[in-house]
Length: 116
Length: 109
Image (cartoon, rainbow over all chains, first blue to last red; front, side):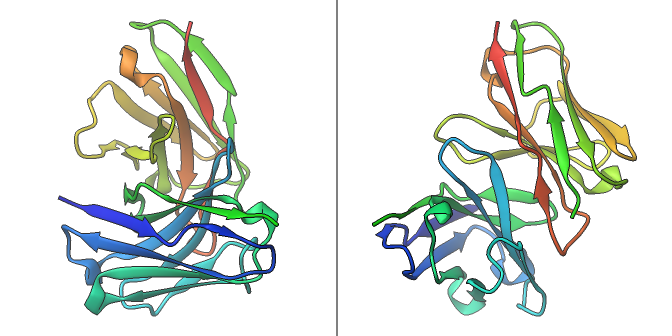
């Protein structure tokens, strides 16, 4: 059974940094692209980033380009999102998804709160 | 960037009725790259249908999608109590920028 578990979300000050992790089980991780999607409190879904199976192709939404960096470690079945220069508007639940075009499996999400 | 606009914002129906949710794209896209998700409060979204006629694993056949060009529809043929939730469309054809619609809340009348 496919499972995605995000971790690393917490309260962080504006301007701070945070690294989210997503651990995948139940499928051959190194054969799937992955994506990050977030959802601000009471709001809709926002796609953030895409990384191909062997990291050769990476895309970002304009809202996070230059501040967020996606990466993966296929040996550890793990996906990461390095978030720098965080702003109040980055407050959201962050989901990792298996991107089988479309996102067919989602983690439960991890909450990032950016506040002073 | 392809913008997806969903309508209505809220749809009030009763169990047993038919639901029709709309997703309009700012430019033409192939239904091959259009997906619909369901989200219940406090839960992660769940993939329902994608492409012209594909349903995700475990999704009942009362859920179907249709459309072409810029206008797409999710149809729930006969509403069950567990179908009341928020629904999102997503286009994933443009790898430079996937986008979601703003969502339609399906509530019990």
